[in-house]
Length: 345
Image 1 (cartoon, helix red, strand yellow):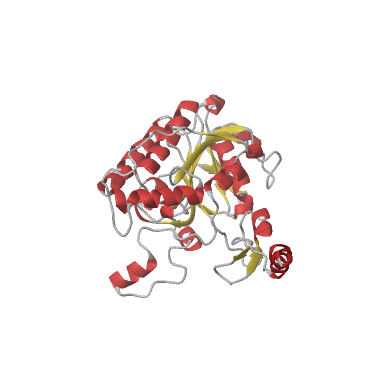
Image 2 (cartoon, rainbow, N blue to C red):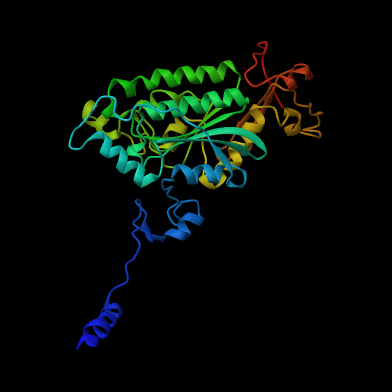
């Protein structure tokens, strides 16, 4: 009887037992309910093929897709107290941090990396919404500041991917202090005449929107991203009025001048590379000037003070130039020019 209990029955159970399915094998689109195979979604840069819905992307995956060859160097960040206020609500704050670190593999909500984008050095920071809602705490603030100061040291553009629910309540006033501290770091970038480009992803709200996320030289939003300080539901309850359709979404904000571009994720990397080329003068303005006659008139070579307007797909749709010397080709981004009326080409 032992061979029946020890051999036959376990084999029968193994045949009849259902195979366990991984939790993330199939992903449901939040907008349409469409089920997508995870590998297909990952190959499509986490954009749902049918609805074009942009899913959230982890910080390591975002940096890997941004830098050339997926290679980048992680910036070392200063250590901060884990639980400065000894905070506890339903659970200890230290337990929440531990769970978030185990879930994401990150030390905190912001990951900073340095590498090359289309051959040019840049520094990029990404907020991971899966880490406590991408909330801004002491560690996240230090990460953003360290990334900006690394960009100043390397004399390279700084790109920020924002995704946050706001300040981290478990750190109280210490989290709110990160808003002015990061604003000072943005000013250091401007004094160094370095481009600061912000990519607003879904969702970007609260204290992050009220500080460094809206202080960029250029603001790019992903399609459908929710961007604002307070959420639409809170605003409706406060003002007791019905909000317009698409309120606080990327396309609505583009129409009302709050963001400069709405760019699909498939074109985002090329758009960022093109903007960095333009703003750092690694691609001189004369390279994008019209080479031949236009309406019977000779076109003019574009000088350094070239102002280009980019369309939603990242293509240059309008160019304005100012008369100036060719010596300004060697001047860095942000160098003030003598005010004079522009001439359209």
